[in-house]
Image (tube, rainbow, N blue to C red; front, side, top):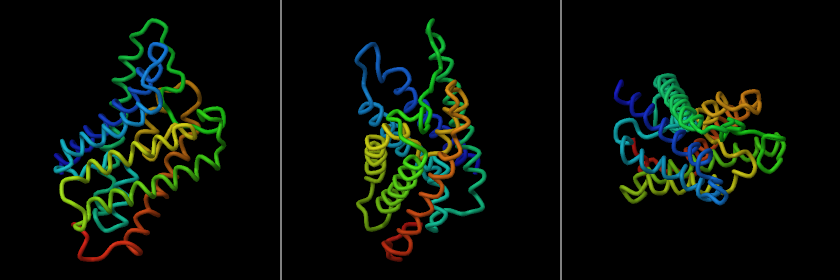
Length: 233
């Protein structure tokens, strides 16, 4: 179990460090950076690369909502949820801490939003809380459908990380303007801790909505889409 928890911690570290790091350091650098399209791709690449690197050890969740969804779908033991959640939170916060150390090395650095999630004034596009909740629930539900479908026995073997990474990229392309994209409570908590825009006070929807969305997506897969002989254990 220790190896599994370590893999989840390192994977979540890379997701937060790479995804939030691209947003914080490269999105608008120096005047024209990678933009939100580049940030979207960066988040997808973090999951894709770590799924190939350590997915064979832990299953490559890197996200408390994914762990819950897999449990609802019968692909993961509920008894292991707490350990995975703790490892993911620790890894995410460590990634954000290292990112803060690097970013603060610039003379005029201000943490600002620190790539955190938010609504109203903290939404990149000025979207309200209801829009944020709906977006996060729907997108996390479809993220679970992508994960469960691409890892089923009916799917081509070996390509799941590509589908999952590209799925996360698409999710960010849709929702960065709305919430700065969470679909991952560990990522949201980690960034909010270091933000100076009040993001920590708005973090609860980005814990609740992804968990609800993941459970919904998993239930849809389990009861409407999956066939018993197409499920991988």
